[in-house]
Length: 73
Image 1 (spheres, rainbow, N blue to C red):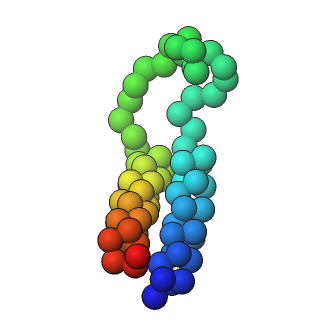
Image 2: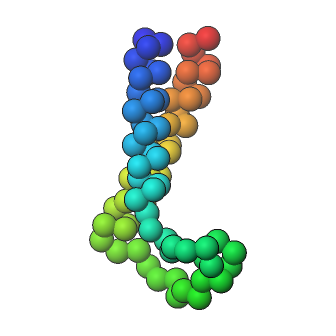
């Protein structure tokens, strides 16, 4: 069971990294330092779905970590 949880954590973490990197919120060094003059708008379509997937993957990763810490040691 411990190996299955570890493998699931690795797979979920890779999927979470990919989901976060696929979100394009703004590019360039100006945005990092506060120079991006962008109008904030509602997320639609793929952007909204990708946001939901990222949140779901983060919750699953967190739950697996808690389960691993409490029940597998």
